Amino acid sequence: MRTGVDYSSVTASHGWDCAVTVRESPAAHPAAESAAPAPGPPDAITRPTRRGLCPLTLLRAACARPGHADGLLLNGRAPGLRRLFGCLAAVFYVGCGALGLATLPLPDPGSDTAATAIVYAAAVVVGIAVWLAPWERWPRAASLSILPPAFALIALRNAFGGPSLHIYGVFFVVAFVWIGMAHPPRTSLAMAPLATAAYILPLFVLPGSIGAGLSSAALTIPVCVLVGEGLAWGMSRLERIEMALLRERDRTEQLRELDEMKDRFLSTVSHELRTPITICRGHLEVLDESAGHRELRTVRELVIDELDFMGRVVEDLTTLARMDDGALLRQESLPLDGFMTSVSAKAETILGDRVRTQPTAPGAVLRADPQRLTQALMNLLQNAADHAHGQDPVRFSVQPGPASWRFEVADEGGGLPPGEEQVVFEPFSTGSSADGGTGLGLSIVRGIALAHGGECGVVNQSGRGAAFWIRIPR
Figure 1: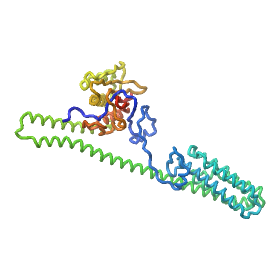
Figure 2: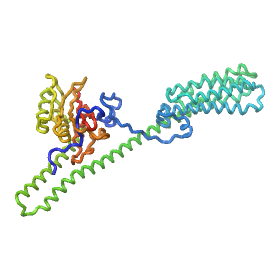
Figure 3: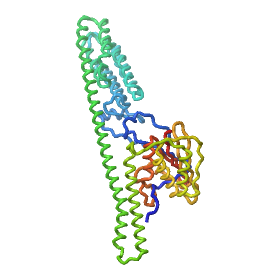
Figure 4: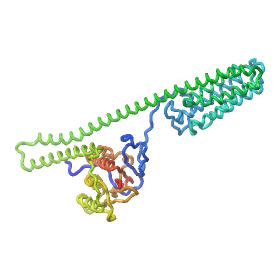
């Protein structure tokens, strides 16, 4: 038979080993996503986000460094993608240099083989340096610093490589392909003057007509810019599509989690209400019509007690459901000393002379809903009465903060088992308790604190005690 009010299985005391703060999830209020977190002990559990597989997985794996998130697949601002595009530039550098060194034995009239070999070797060295650079720690625009050396090497290659103009466009196309993949639109257009200078300046030291070279530049550079801008536009478009898909995936995941929460909620409520209904029905079915007055009174007390329990469950669920409704609170200005005296008088009916109330400075004023805040504090005091050891004192106090009042209920009980600090404020969480409680008491405490714009938490010292607190804005 249940008697009294059931609360979740927790104890409260001055413990200082583990601190937990319960705050409203930013996902519930998008407007609060950018707000700075309120000061208090940390309690967040970070769950890693899922990511899809990226093309060029082997290249990414080779470039990956521990401690840096990859972010979106196509988001060039993400550290992993900055690293990936840096490695791609290194591959282009080394590949072009190695290809040039491999083709040096081929006939090329008018070229300076030794100088050209040095240029290609320099490209390989620069490529290795680019590969080793910490691009994930640098901003996206920093990778543009590799373009001036690239254009300088192209210009030197053309200056020493003979009069053949068809060599020019090949390396410029490679450079602008990388620009289009690694940088946003209009970057290729911004790099066009530098590329034009790298294309035209060698013409003044090469034999032959400068006019022919200018005509080639007038065609080659615009084509390279078009290639770079086309790739950049495509990558930007794919990035927006990917971000939209990720948002939809997140919404789907949230809906799935909400559906699972609904199923768990209905299952738990069904179980909590089925048990007292079964008890009532079973005792009434076996009640003999000729039962005596004593037996009738016993069955009646049991049925009333179980009905009271079901009523408390329904009332607690109604309170939880209305926590987001602004009409739930009826705030008013309260003299803090009078409010503490009132709650202490009610606590004495539960704890007797075990409660120790800390005096409050006279004249202090609190703005809150007196009934709801009293309900939250009484839940904590009842919880301490149910789970504290023997006749250990229970301390009830309020401390001023810069912009809030911090109410605390603490005892010298056994504290919370390690690992339960994060879950005791969840609905229907009874922790390790076997007393049959519904696990709604601390959920209501959290809801009332959040409805006031405050927060609640626990400072736990397993085996020695815990201190549950509520912080209410002034």
